[in-house]
Structure formats: C-alpha cells, structure tokens
Length: 167
Image 1 (cartoon, rainbow, N blue to C red):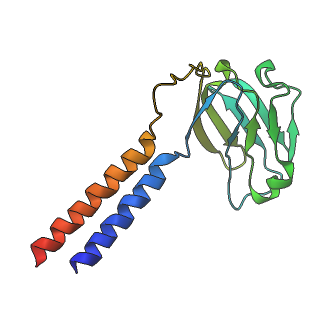
Image 2 (cartoon, one colour):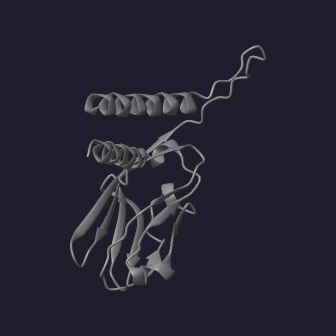
C-alpha cells in the first residue's frame, strides 16, 4: 500500500513539473525570435470572423469570412504576422509573429465574433543577453542536472524513510 502511495506521489510530482514548465497563456521570448500564439476553438464554423488585438486596441490581424486581412493591420505587425488558413476549418486561428521587437510585448486577444468568445495570452519580450567570454580556468557546471539529481535524491530518501517506517 505504501509503495503504491509512493508511486502515485512520484507520478503526481512529475506531472506537476511538466505542467508548470510551459504555461499556455504566457510566452517568454527574446528580440528577434518568433512565437506562435495559439487560438483554437473547437466545433466552430470555418467562416468564423476572428479578431486579433494587442493590448485591446492595436490591430494585429483580422480573419474575416475565413480569409486573413492584412490591410488594416498596425505597422508594428506588417510583414511579421502569419496565420494558417488551411487550419481555419479545424477551428485553429493561431498566428505566428516573426522577428519580435520589444514593442511586441503585451496582452494579445483572439476574439471569436459570432460566439462572443475571447482567449487572452501574454507575450513577454526581452533583449538578447550579451555573451560574456568564458573564463578558461573555470569548468562549466550543469546546474540543471545537479538540481534534478538533488530532487531525485530527496524523493528517493523520502521513499526509503517511508518504507523503513512500515517495517
């Protein structure tokens, strides 16, 4: 019974790590990167009108009658926005923003007009880190592996203690 509880705890712990690593509503990128902002509505008609906005007022992209319209797009997004018309029939109105600038950061909304539904996500854009030359005398550490090893050791220790208490 205790071993089952330990296994369940381990699975819940690992599942929690996966879900916390990538939030569906927040995206962190650096200047020059690209990002795909998801906007998927299941069971929608392919001719649905979808309005993409940045900070509620800046026109990112309009999809009207199943066609992306770039004419009224804000200059900030000219030649930087791509949608996927072949996916509209599946309810996928996601967009890709290319060559990000700091001014692209903000709150993006994907508004489905006919059903009055809206999805909101946050994009954070930061400067590229400046590269510092490595000191030849220092051996680089893999801190990610060290952290994971410590977590695994802690978990195994807890399971061992739990098992010892049952004996």
